[in-house]
Image (cartoon, rainbow, N blue to C red; front, side, top):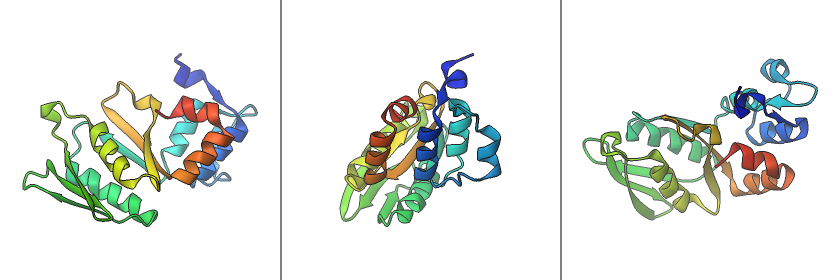
Length: 168
């Protein structure tokens, strides 16, 4: 079994993460996967993936659809995000608070969606940031989570080893 399936996340760290992600710590799903010593990494990540702050992108994702979901997530943090794409909806501009940057995502060109996320992060920092789940590394489906910088700092302070383990 892989480290992802056997690693146990301590209860306190798991609780800190669930709260930061807005997951109900008293839900049936949480109780289903909770163990006396914590949560298996794979189970905790599954719970976290139910959060509205998680963005899952398949390598074939259309840029416009992904940007619409990102726009909704950023609106939850009161960050004004706009985008304007070309007629093929594969490239264009994204704007946050009057700062505009170009983006492009064409899988057949070998583009990586990480480049789009990095560009968005440049525009939304220092208010918020997307981070990729480590379990996405080497996969053709990527999961990112959006939290405020304040929430990331708190998690890094309260559960530093777990944050490094889970997020790139």
